[in-house]
Image 1: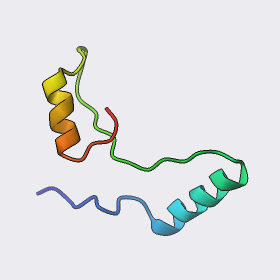
Image 2 (image 1 turned 60 degrees about the horizontal axis):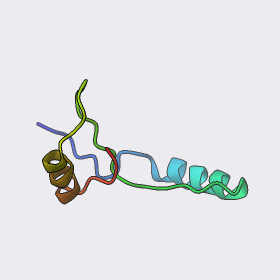
Image 3 (image 1 turned 90 degrees about the vertical axis):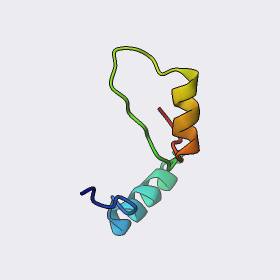
Length: 58
């Protein structure tokens, strides 16, 4: 039902992006972005839930 997204981006593409960022002295971070529908902000409970599920940024 839901396709796996463990490797959502091509590894060669990711490697190239890391090399380009390094070449230009840019800090590149990897993580899981969690997006929720608005227009209201997330509650503390929702933030804690997303964190416990492995989210890095909302």
